[in-house]
Amino acid sequence: MKTLVPMNEVQFQRYLQIMIPEYAQDKVRSGQWAQSQALELARQSMQTSLPQGLATPDHHLYVMEHGPQRAVVGMIWIAAMQRGDCKVAHIFDVMVDEPYRRQGHATWAFAELEKRALELGLSGLALHVFGHNPQAHALYVKLGFLTTNINMFKALA
Image 1 (cartoon, one colour):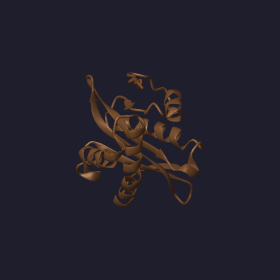
Image 2 (spheres, one colour):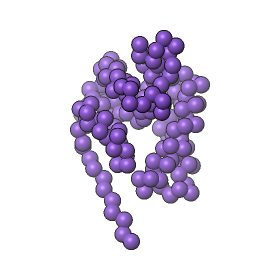
Image 3 (tube, helix red, strand yellow):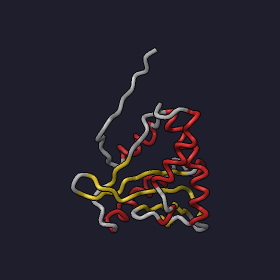
């Protein structure tokens, strides 16, 4: 049995400890931030995105639970955002813990997320994927996401 459950404060604090350094490294790897500033910029970004933590309006953070023991296998964070003439669920983060990857948890969570988004009156799902994460990109394409923008970069020696 799988369930998507609102994140509690203990889970949120644990999530921040993992997410902030990972986000900082993703931004460095994508060439957007310098290593020396990345951790502080990631902290600032999180404070800007979730100024009231779990109580930030229009933001919903869930944990993915699995099995009879309800083991937490991952998480997903969405926010209701305006996109053109409609409101959509922007997916800020999806994380499946290493031992549970490639077992269908993310695919299931996205299907469940579609139901939650509709219940919230949202008309679509949107997300960003880093170019250096082809596994995530492949999953999103498989789930029916379409590319809407592509940023490119070429380093000059």
